Amino acid sequence: MKRIALSLTALMIGAGLASAAMAADVTVTLTGVQPKGGRVLVSLQTASEFMKPEGHYGSIAAGDVTGAETVVVHNVPAGEYAVMVLHDADSDMQMARETDGRPKEGWGMSGQWTRSRRPTFTEVKITVPDAGTAVTVPMVYP
Figure 1 (cartoon, one colour):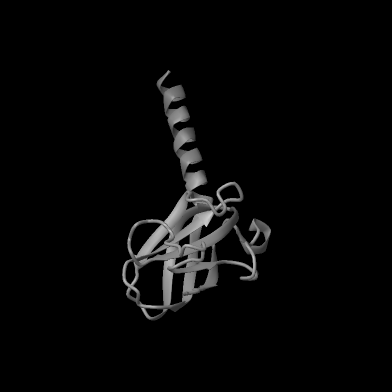
Figure 2 (figure 1 turned 60 degrees about the horizontal axis):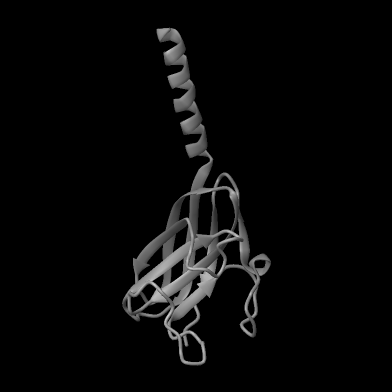
């Protein structure tokens, strides 16, 4: 009986190590960052989370950098994600907007998209392989 319990424990530990090995880092280099204070919030969103205040994987950086800033999001499983960035200058954890809906704070997204309309997930998605990946996201400020 002890042998069975030890075998099951070893199997569970091995499964845990295997799933941990399948998660990798995503390195996000932000360009054009302006020193607006607050925090820079970086999130990776799946298709179902896209453009919603959701996301399972993310990181927070200081908002007082000028130029480029690199943020690493750890333990991301392989898959397709949109990299969404908010320079939350007022630290309220949401995008401040003008009365007409335009952003009042800096923001950025991965992929190829046009600022003349709302992007689709397909336009901004990146593919994260088992080994992880790196992406550059240009920041946009009002």
